[in-house]
Length: 247
Image (tube, rainbow, N blue to C red; front, side):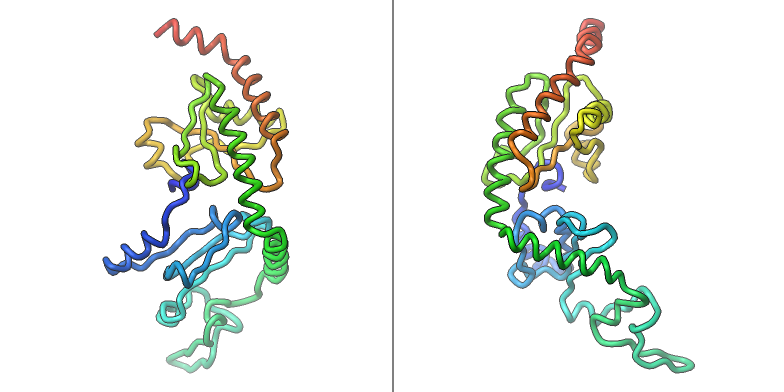
């Protein structure tokens, strides 16, 4: 929740260790992390780890589920079909060994190939280079956005622990309106509660806009965002001032 909203990079390894001490099974959602940093499931010691392929430039409709072998062996399959059966009897069934046990029916072969190509592409660039590019772009974006008096930023103050997302609001304008105008300016942001409703409720806001940066973004993209935000504010400026006077 913190990573997708504030941009905080959580100490997952520490959280997993604490959770295991309490007897919990840990499922890590790495969808927000996998495009930006290398992940070692053995080092993390997580029980399960999942991510969606499209977050790392793969086609839609494909993802990854990692699970410890002992956990997966104890689990019953949730889909039935070809290739996941070992033997079928009138009153009982045995299942194929892992991973076939959980791969019933026809697989999304083209999605798997696309995911593999995306992984090779990212590995070819290198996570170190990706992080270096992102850090430069995000620092530039934070600097530019923080100079706009009408912008409210929702980001972690810890630069060393910040990922590539920046959540913000234009004061006095609903995030959906902001996103709609930015869209017409060919600037893509997400508006809404970003799967973090408890956190947004705690902050006392209905929703926010969120800009997500990756290695293909440039400082010119940030400048276009700032220009579009200035245009957005000017469109609503007189209404914002009228609302303030009425209050």
